[in-house]
Image (cartoon, rainbow, N blue to C red; front, top):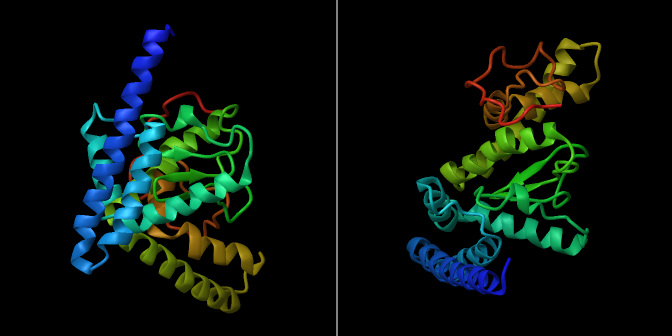
Length: 243
């Protein structure tokens, strides 16, 4: 890039950062003032706008990007706050190349190689942040999972807002309890872990939805005997060959 092009790019990015920070904070403060939480909400909205603007994740040339920004700053602010925690965890890790800009810029999400995860080998999406992408740069299957599975979770968090983590968490707790009872009654040859995992995790409607979109229903880890029989929705078409 020429010096003029670099200056122009820097100015455009600076304007975007300022705009997303101010507007994000204003939207969050105004919407959550109804619950007398304007100040903390404005902080979360502004922080999300600052990070998202600096990394240019929103697709402003598409209506989708505007909807994503507004939802992240208002209705989905609870999961956006969780995303800030994920950013902090990734920052503390200090892993070189941890942030995957090529899978984040203008794609309405952030993607980290590591970040905040709970299970080895599994990605974890918190708000608009996808954690645990691992070898996504090298492995097409990982990129496919981010685009067709984890990105579904990003939008689930946006559309369902505070309902999403509440229902997801409640399902897991109840599902783990039921899984334990089913294992005790049925006494399958497999251990209790796979039974609980299938009922508490794979049968979770949000996971059923995401795995179906990815074209992986039932997933390899789910016990067919205890899983939903058919996909919930149609799968996305592959965006690239999967290996």
